[in-house]
Length: 363
Ligand SMILES: [Fe+2]
Ligand SMILES: [Fe+2]
Figure 1 (cartoon, rainbow, N blue to C red):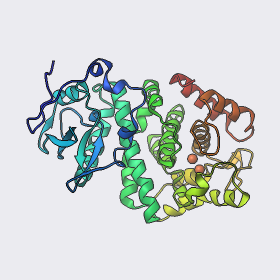
Figure 2: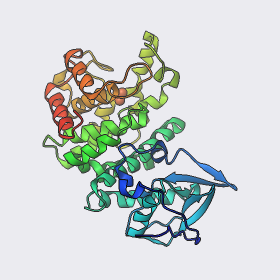
Figure 3: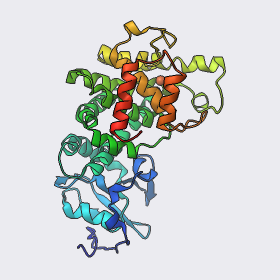
Figure 4: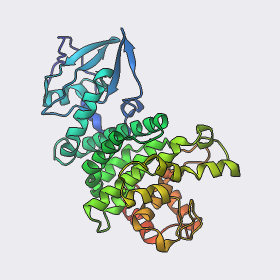
């Protein structure tokens, strides 16, 4: 039993009762702050700090960035750049009720690199336990996708660096969703907040799971996984007052919303995306009966990958807390898709989504 947390500065602090027994990573839903690690910043004496959940500090690695803990409103150095993280670090932080560690904003690129270099290996190892690996996946992916959307809003094209980052994420994580058990843990972490970046992550998760019930080559899986993450990129060009409007859109507003697939493709037009990835961006609102947009394509020309994204896209939208409609339970969403959206979806894909969701104990 560790008697105190040994901060690099020599400062120690006392355990909080009960947290060690409960297991920090077993909380069904991480607090907002853990998922918003690159949004919230604290500034003290001109230094900016970002909160990071302790489970993002992986044992047997060297971070290359300083880690701080907060005590009595002060940031105290806990680990230096060269320090090797050990089992002790992993155990003692949650054991003592530390829900966040902090890194300095100017070292965020080092932290990002550290996470991205270790993510693939960590996800597919036996240690840490699956609950924790699911939380690591969710936190790391959300960070990458959130930045992608933030940057595309200010840069109005997607940079090659951003694309490579997302591609690397897909390559490292796609297979994680093939496991029913992993999906079960991920489902518990999903926040139904309907932010475009979290929606994009969820569509990636569900699509990856459904796609892997088919016999796709790995190269195709990666291309479609990338398409799932990028499918709503064009929404970054749609005014927030339309996207977040309470109540029905006017027909003029809906016409603006309908431009997002083309806007998304335009944002990526200078990049070497495969046809499969581009199809996911362009055609995820097409319907099997030809009543979708932007082209009114029918089932015979809609690729299977697009049909998968289309089903997962609607499922995640309906189960999210949208400003203009009530959030549905998984069962209500699937019933509505089956009864009220007849003709929209590929029924085989729809059945496979149900199979995946029931395997993950979502329904
Ligand atoms: Fe969309
Ligand atoms: Fe979407």
